Image 1: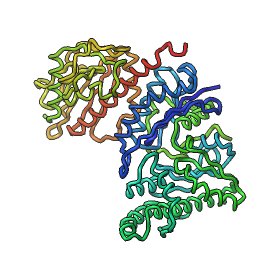
Image 2 (image 1 turned 180 degrees about the vertical axis):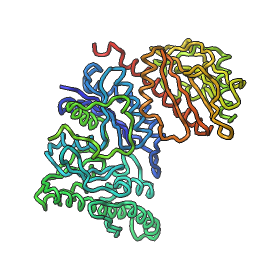
Image 3 (image 1 turned 45 degrees about the horizontal axis):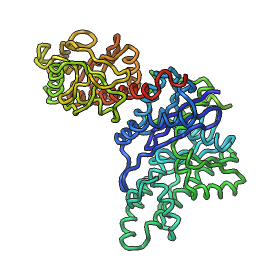
Length: 335
Length: 206
């Protein structure tokens, strides 16, 4: 019954999780929140992570009721993500692995999301919509790889939302996406925005440029409210995501859809995806904010699967990778 | 010589004058890696009350030759860093009086590539409490070595309990950035080793 300790810190969330045999024993997390109108920079984020990570480690082991002796493997996010935060976490993982004499495992962040989604929801072989501040991909499993069927060709959907939040000086606490969601519920007018689906892929940078420009003009003239803009942006980008997910499901003949990633917490997105799934006779799976948002347990869970399948990461290969594709990993733990 | 290099060497000289014996403060430190003052070795701006991590000798050489008056090394504490011998420490790397640092090869001579193409060589030797700690520090940082930096070569080796780093670069600004980055990561690693050992002593869980 291996117990795996997982470290996650590829963006502004730092988490340490403990998983054993499919059970999440601990999953404490901290978020680096910046003032409204600003985003998080790599150096500052890394400093935040360095300051709290060891406290989180202690908290995780205490919550799990385990000691260093009970841990069988140390998993950490190898990538993708922001360089300095990734390094700050990897350094701790390497040090812990050496001090405690445990094997080390570098985990792909995207696969961490997928494996945690599968564990929590019980989905067997879903088409996965992975949406976050840093990634937007439609993924399906085939022959030992998580294949990317469609993705953003520029910025992630969460990045589009976060940067729009800065324009409106929406608070980043607890997250800009959450606050946009709450404002969108009060929106009444749909402002037409560019709809940019390109086959299996999507594009968000043009929508962002457009709405940033529109916001300046229409808010000044009173043609719409900030709530209307939040509503319009969500409706547009989420409809695009639903379209490319449905296209992938049709291609694969899939009867399951799983949403993972921080944007997956959005209830409007889940509602729109549910509508599409019902129309297709498919089933939708989604997790709550404990596991949608970046967390340590998802890295521990993916690490647990990898550990049991015999994966190990030598220290010499334990460098981080800012660009680490989901389909680079050989998924040997699945048939 | 680049002014930053002058300040670094001046700091090393002053530290040598002040003597060695700095010991990292592990248990009592509430701050982050910055408190170890390692970054101050290069910048020559030690913070008051900043205990040192593994203090090392730095050597900055350039084409002016081994006889350069700025080539002396010494314990790498910057001015203003308090004598930390009395600080409480848990398995902190101890510091021995360092002789003139000469790099892994024992030769502090400048690397002369040819006229019109000067190269700067900077060596740093950092004694740890044991070979294990020095190797641990090297392995913790080595995987993230910034291999993509054009024009800066870096070689990191461990001999006995000494971590030795040797940079060769043509551009003093790139060299400075590389050294600063390394020292920042090193201080983070050392701080982690100390803090993890204090939070989870070897008897943890027995």
